[in-house]
Each structure stands twice: as structure tokens, then as C-alpha cells.
Image 1 (cartoon, rainbow, N blue to C red):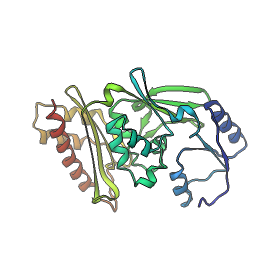
Image 2 (tube, helix red, strand yellow):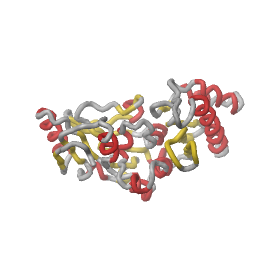
Image 3 (spheres, one colour):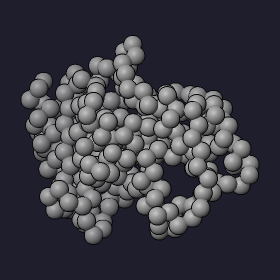
Image 4 (cartoon, rainbow, N blue to C red):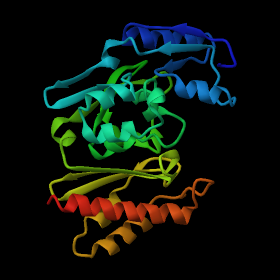
Length: 278
């Protein structure tokens, strides 16, 4: 149960949602946009989230789209992870989505909710970073579209009153050779130590990481080392690891040194698999 009372709103359009947010904000209701609601429920129990109003975006048609439009795969932010898994329009995203939580939770967790969540793993971010996807955002100033990686700096940079409507992935990028691997402390149980998602575009490997740092990331410096084929793979991997942003997570799931060790192992697997396709 959520330990506070709130009003529930279900707009049918982007314009209605943003107007509702503005009106509720003026009334001091501290509104929140709502997709699957799993994180709101979890964090509210710890006193980390509180609101007097939620705005459910799942009934806005643009937020539910799943289609090819021209050269782009359009993914509505209100699609559940289970829906993405079953449709499988972008295999790397499917692999990331199906590794999150369990089936029951994935039935509720939405793509937009995972991307914008406060729990820092946000693993669906990784395929979007390496595919160089676009993100469509709605807010008080209308609807805008940007490259996802330009707005994602440790977290997606949204203004007050903005929400994610869609993600757009180039159909060519969605079909590129890819690698995804998630390593946990114990088998299939618990939070990940390290997750890697990578794509091979021509002769270039793009890679993004979650679990190593308290934020997902893709780094040009890391990729420069990984793609320097004038050096042996082991040297490239160690140089890439040294270029990871800081801090490195050090917690009950695993020490910083162990996370970097696991990341190096997974990078070795990624290079082996993707370079074999060149």
C-alpha cells in the first residue's frame, strides 16, 4: 500500500496531461507522471516519494505506440517490459528488458519508467545509448525530440512537468550484431554486479554499462580503447576499464575491485563474440 492519499488522473492526450500537471503544480499538489507505478509504490514505503496527485500516461495513444514509421522503430514509453519482450522489435532491448526483475514485475514496469527511475540500474538505457536512439519528450513548452545520449547524463535530464512519450530507434541499428550479458552475485538472484550491452556498427563496437557505477553510462574514451585494434585485446580491455567514470560501486553486492574484474571478463566475451562477426 502507498502510505499517503492522492488523486488519480487519466488523461487521453499529451496536451491534457501537460495541462493537468501545470494546474496541479499551481495548486501545490506536487504531481507525478505515472506509468507502471512500481517504483512509486516501492519508494513511497521508504518515505522517498510523496505526492498528492498522479497522472497516468498509459492511455495516451502516442505513449502506447509500437510500430515502424519510415526508417524508425517507434516505442511508446508506456509499453511494459513484457510487451517489449513478447514483440521483440529490437533484440538487444528485448534481452535487456527480460533480465529485469521477474515476469510479474515486468508486466507492470514500463520502458519510460525504467529509463527515468530513481533506482540507478535502469538497464533499458543501455541499448538506447548504443543504438543512438532519439527520445520524444512532452512538457509545458510542447513536444521535442533529441538524441537520447545528448540528454542522458547519469540520468535523463527532464525539466519539471516533462515526461517521455516515445523512443525512436533507427531500424538499421535495431538489427545490428549485438551482445548483452548480466552478471549477478548469485546466479539469477539479486541486483546485477555488471550489465553490458554492445552493438557492432561496421568495424566499430559501441558499449554501455550498468552496475559498475551508480549510474548507467556509455563513454567515448572507453570505446576508443576497445576499438584500438593496434593493441592486443587484453591491453584494450584494461585501458577501457581504467577509463571508466568514477565512483565505482562498492557495496554488499560486490566490491569495486570485483566489479571491475567482472566487467573485464564480460568485455572479453563481448569482443570475442562481436569481432568474430567482422
